[in-house]
Length: 464
Ligand code: MEV
Image (cartoon, protein in one colour):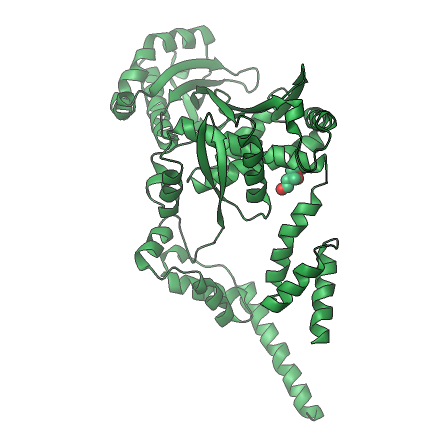
């Protein structure tokens, strides 16, 4: 290529870059939600990508060819442009309260499903997991401001309490038929925290539904009743009649919607490959849990491992993992410091390991009747009630934690993890099946690290 051609080529490249950057500077849009799906994708591709055609191809590759299924997914959220896959795996052989389960897990992290399966197998021959649902109460609050005489507010609340129930009768009818409904409504004085701040603190039973919509609808009605009744309450002054409702919303902190999962066995029964001395193993294990109980830096990672199991099942069964995460971590900090969700003891030669977590889950309503794979997962779990699902989810968390602590206190976590991670690296480099075989053979006896694998692939390819 002569010099003038080279200059022209570079010039074109620079202009293309300038054009692309100019487009990027003007990347706001009005009425985006009104565009068709194709128009949305085109707008994004043209505004953010140097090679729009490639971007469009990537996004469309993930569309489902079944148009009805695709439309179902499109309508779960707003501005859908494609689907974002997360693998669905299964962990078989879970013995829970004497019954066998295959647990579905939707998760992108390698090793998690393998770890759950390993724990399931380990405990199936040692009595399995036992679980108890401690309580199933949900909570919602109406947050409001009242400036006036507190004793007058208290008697007003007592006087009108029955209207809270009667005004929500149509909303609660179906739930009451299923054995749920509003359990109690309390007036709580929070003026020590914020001037004039009070709450209606409401407890609910929502049976097999997670109950978010039910709770929020009830709360909004309770707020209306509160305002209307205050407005016509003769004993209030004009100012006191003006109760200001700030918001009405359920709480994702559900310390009384609690499940406990446990495993236990005589210490000598812990013996297995990598656990040659079960006494030493049990002591190191209990010590590791103790560290997570007292040391927040460790507790967060320890609990993250528990959530690997919990979130995966919560997602696979169409439940709200953000709500579960928020509630579980608040529970982990309920005593004022962040601590371990699980506990372990050795007493009279007996090893016990358990956790107690708040879980507000549903097996009816929401996504459970809509998402075909959620329906599939619930059927695989033999259509559990919400309480049974709480038990399965808690067990997945405990199993995960057991597997992590078992590795951490014996071989270390990286050995197993890197074996699984190897596949991800091989996929990233799009290795051929011959290359895959040579690499796997080589790393059978070598320490796996990202850089070592990459170097090996490069050497292999250079030789070819
Ligand atoms: C990794 O996803 C989870 C662990 O770090 C949990 C733990 O350290 O207990 C292995």
